[in-house]
Length: 201
Image (tube, rainbow, N blue to C red; front, side):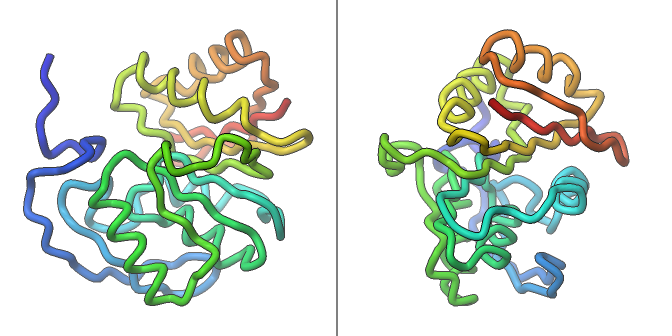
């Protein structure tokens, strides 16, 4: 089945790229962000990400932090605002999303945020935290490959926090991570149709 060119997980969306400003609440403050069509949740902060941000504990103050599937960047921006001495890696395949996030980060003076594709992350970097609203709709095979690549790069004693809709397979994904990646998964919160999963070595 062919992929529509304007899916948020396309590398180069074909839809209108006109930027729009939205004000969202991140890290306890109102932040103006850039959004556009062709990226995930172009209207502003989506419900699942809001649940994640409301439920996760404070990120590590230093080290390398990863937002896996960053979109226009609410998770990465939160990490960068809350941990200014850390390096935040915002990872996505969607070049428009990365460009939007770079613009927002620059405007906010967040020099610790790097919006990148997978090949731009040095192979030796291990992550002191991973936060993600993973792109479930890419399909199970692609999603599993994504998690298989990045979750094992957690540093010792580090944690990943994932938010997944119950009706999109949060429980089965938790089992898969445990069985296939030999990582410990706990359900830490359930809200508004979403589960927040904690993943540890």
